[in-house]
Length: 87
Image 1: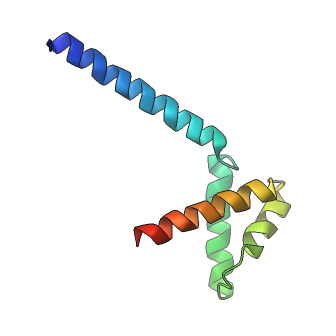
Image 2: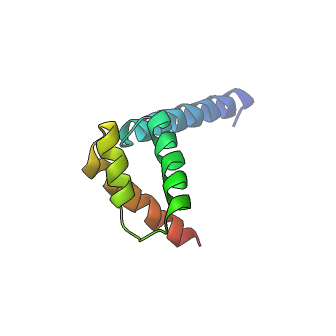
């Protein structure tokens, strides 16, 4: 394989990865600033009270910020499953 062909394939892979990341970002339940605010808010709330292993704080945040509660909860639960699987 020639150097130019290898470089072309590398560029195609980068393009595909960029498009995949963009699509994944679009499927998230909230914008990046809203997700960051959620995590900051959860950190604050969980510093005040113990975690009860429910999504009631996430639902409260969603209501306060006009986010799609169902979509946010599904995403949150899927992230928890991934986090648990990694450890």
